[in-house]
Image (cartoon, rainbow, N blue to C red):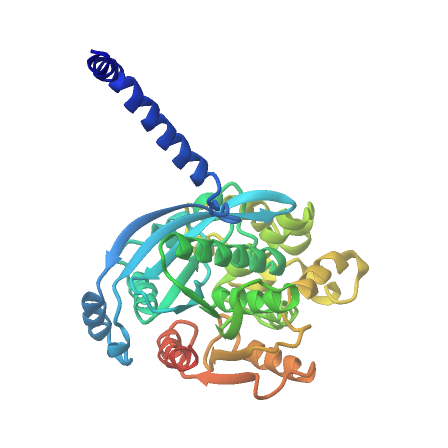
Length: 410
């Protein structure tokens, strides 16, 4: 009888016993998980959204159709294209910047290349607005498909940071914004299980050439943990800004006055130079320039609102006094500060420029190369490669030359 009573008691309280056991098991597993390491929070990456996937077969076909004289067998991985936002700093404050990151779909360790676009003034031209049918998208995805994490910054002033004017040809913020995006790209690769082998490459054309060299310099001077800069490929950039301005003061006309106005307007806002527009430009242009850089106009439209006749654009006093009068020292000092001629690269650099270029004069790259060599740069480190063509037509020869060199160094 005692035995039956015990069975009845157990049956009556079985649910409670099971509940207690389950509670103990759950509590035990929770306690165990509390000892597991939590992944570190991202330092720079804020958000990443996949835009589209490019297949390797599609990229091979498009590369052949576009007439790229490259080994398309190097294009071997599908690639995911992400729009990313990340943290960087501008004038002492944190700001959210943006761009594209393309990740190859592979388990093989891969390097990273940051590719930097030329001058834009229209918000719609930012890389983060690129669609898979745009011509630039082919290059970005093909680089990734050949075995690279590919980084394409919008630049400050575009994409997520349109609250400020792009700091055009300002070395400090040019380099720091790219370096912060490289960290964000590495963090995204970790999240997506793409293994980065620490090898970094930089490339870009026109303003992108300046961005490339400024970033190369910034990495060598400030360091970038967990990255090994292997080589950079800057092309057709206005590296010596002092040289550019002195060149323009000897010319009667210049077909792209928007570039000059862009630099001066950027320096006005970046360095808080209240009088620089009227010191540099005649009326009505000094009053007109701020409204031209509102993010709705391309460079052709801005050029049409200025004048190619430089004597009508520049103040007369500028010709004789820019380099000698203390009144203009603040402008000249800004040109000197942002010229990339005062350093000695140690990682490989391949400089390119079209020999018929008058938009960014070919001689500017020659002079920069000679100054870097005079600073003590090794001839085995720095190579200068003249290209056939002008500012537009030399782009394709540049790509055809730098990409095989990139592949050979990876």
